[in-house]
Each structure stands twice: as C-alpha cells, then as structure tokens.
Image (tube, rainbow, N blue to C red):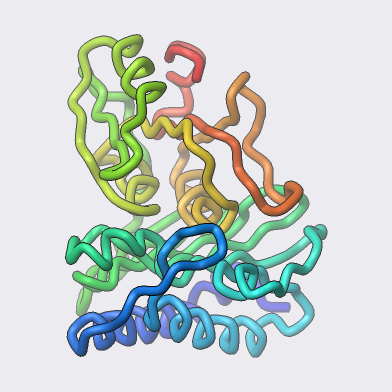
Length: 262
C-alpha cells in the first residue's frame, strides 16, 4: 500500500485527464438526462467516473470504491473501514448552465474520517490536494505545487455559499453571524477556498451525499480547518446510504466555538 503522498502523486494525472475529458464533452456538446432522484447526469459525469474508477482500482486494488454514478446505477457497496468516494463532476447543474464552478473529486475514508482528498477545477485546471499529516497544496497549470493553509478568521468573515442552495435556513444563519462578506461559489470549490485561506466559513443545511464532501473536507482538514455536524459533533463518513446531514465548515478551527451553532 502506498503512503498517502504517493497516492496523491499517482492520482493527480488521472484527475487532470478527467478534467480534460469533461472539457472535451462540454465543448463538443452533450445531452442531459435525469436520474432516479431527479438530479441531472451527462456523458461527462459517466465517462469521468469510469476513468477515475479504473485508476483507483489499479493504485489501490483492495479498497472498495463508491462512485456517484455507479451508486445511482445500483452498485452500492456497504460502508466499511476504508473506502474511496468519487464525485466525477460535482456541480453538474453549473456545468449544464455553462458556469465554471464544477469540480472533480476523489476522497479516501478511513474509519469514518476523510484522510486524503483531491479536487480539480476542470475549467481552469487548478488542482487542490491534501492528506492527513502531510498538509495541503494548490497547483495551477504549468506551475509548481504551493503549500496552502487556512487563515485566522477575517473581520468580517468571508462566507461561501452555494449558487443554488441559499435556502431560508442559510439566510437565517447568515443573519445570526452578523456582518459578513458573502461570496457565492460552486461545488466542492467552497472547501478549497477555506483551505487556501481566501474564505472563512461555509454553512450548509440542505442534504448532500458523502461523495460531495469527502475530498474537499479532507483537504480542509489537512490545511488546518475543521468541519462539524449540527450540534458540534465531528462530521463522519460511512453513514447509511452515504447520506449527509448539514454541516458547518470553518477555516480557522480556533473560532468554531465562537460562531453561532448550525
């Protein structure tokens, strides 16, 4: 079994290959279909997941893989002590709408905790990655990796929220926070904003799936941030159906207890 930085090195090329594939599909044009849960899916989602699944099976053949599209098709391995989570195209609605805020995500879970993650922004080719005990980095196309870390919470804090999920509960939370700088952002890129120190707080009330959050959560933890479920408990993985509750992600872990509870 490779150590975690070696896994990142092995998987970074397939992340970029998946990103290129997604952009090729976007440029060529595509059809949108609905899945059983009424969420949209495209050729880009499915082809990117097949590419990533093959790479993970080669790099770590003994570890189960849970992919969003395979799960939707009925391949649903039960949660276990160690498993991979793939979201091949997080932010499919943004992708369909022509916005740039979509991402490719791979996360590794060990005993309920995200310990390694990679997130790629296909539109601009930026890669973020991190692993527990090894820190996190950002790599722009053609550039060297640059170590990233969360920052002390700004005053007012920069709060990232979804383009499409600014619900009444989130609005109420923002009012309890008081004066904030609000910045809409898409997909798991919100976690990356926290991890690289360009934002401070990410509240989420609506349900998500574990593959939506695992990679970004792992990078956030590696960069010094924190994330908790409502009530302040650690946000864990391997839940029934891989279904998430709400969460509060924070860059400056030291300020978590001073923020309003979710």
